[in-house]
Amino acid sequence: SHSGLAFPLSGHPDVIIPWQELATDTLNSLIESFVLREGTDYGEHERSLEQKVEDVRRQLKNGEVVLVWSELHESVNIMPRGQFRAGQEEI
Image (cartoon, rainbow, N blue to C red):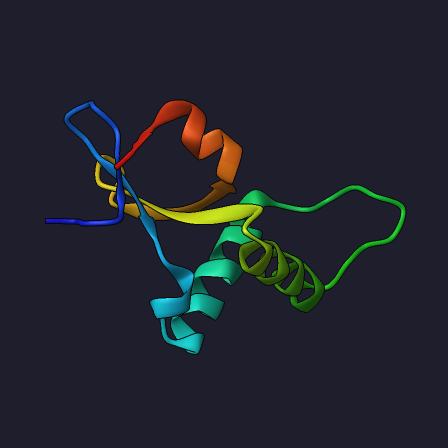
């Protein structure tokens, strides 16, 4: 049972992973792979990988974004909390 985690009503549950429970190295790896997968931002000032990782970490701490395990894709993603809630049911 996944008490306290989120389940959509479909057959492939996406589950919020509490980032606080992950080892620091694991969390860093997840954030780095997410940042690299999302590509480059084309703003006026190019930002380093470290800066982008720090931005995502800050957003996780603030609760703006959540770590989500997708059983369908067998991968972890990072998405805005509101976007997750829009498509999922939280139990």
